[in-house]
Amino acid sequence: MTTATKGALLSSLAMGASTASHAQAAKMEKCYGVSLAGKNDCKAGAGTSCAGTSHVDFQGNAWKLVPVGTRTKIQTPRVPAR
Image (cartoon, rainbow, N blue to C red):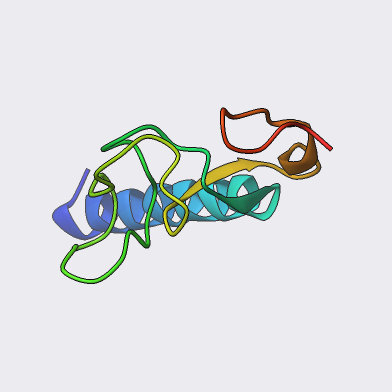
């Protein structure tokens, strides 16, 4: 297999993986205030870089990706399920 062929194959595989992860992400939604300290997916406030930067459990400005439709079923010590 030539180097060009290998490159094209790897590029094709990478695009397939990207498409699959995008489809998975489409079935997820952001849910604020449900992650444990250091386990958030993003947005943890000023002075933080993003994922994994929440300082306390259930930090209100930090979100976690959850399956679509489950946000209202999640119970935390701060907010009971609706």
